[in-house]
Image 1 (cartoon, one colour):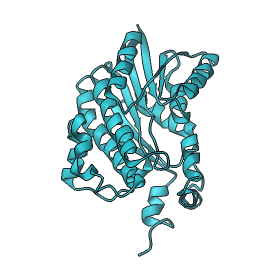
Image 2 (tube, rainbow, N blue to C red):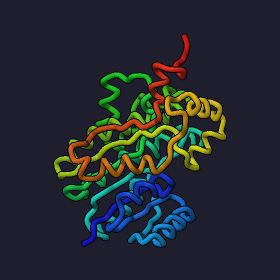
Image 3 (cartoon, helix red, strand yellow):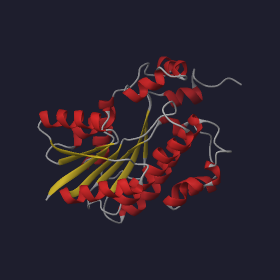
Image 4 (cartoon, rainbow, N blue to C red):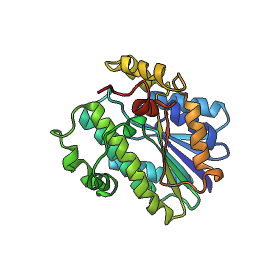
Length: 276
């Protein structure tokens, strides 16, 4: 049977990772919308990859279970990448928490049951999770360990506690990193690893929505004032993912890699710091 790499979210970042880890393996691309999925499949086939595709809605456990079933029918699941999600300008508080937090938790749970020995996983999170104020130890534990179907019922996620879509996004992304830490323990019992990458502003259609949305001025300021003075590219995220998923990353699991051009550093200690 062939080794399988599952890429959830067939956007720019998902494709960049697939290019680096999919050669010689079967790449299963999964996406919510059919048109961009078909375009990605054509690109990969034209580049010589062995690729297939399926529609998935990561806000639905049933849809994720169908994806798992398809993946294991193709071969040994050696890699899982969750690059799917919605941004603060794209969705409501409820949708952000359902897709970015709950959906990621279900993916980790269900693929953790079938990942092959020696396999690895990546969750694409966000720099936003690093700029959320510190949570209590009890809140951290709740985001990491609450049974998946009870996750959205946590008091801290009640609509009276979540201020706006950015706050929901930050909570979801902090939850992703905490969930991956907890799941790394379970994945390790199967001889597999899982990590989180928290990119900053990476130029993708999603980022362009933010740059042209109500928060666009703030995003442009982040790019101008961060230490590297530019946005990132999907291929740079792909390079980090390839390291983490490959043999050179064999001692790394349960970790979150912040790659934001120094925006978070500048937010706390530089020109982006809030002045009191």
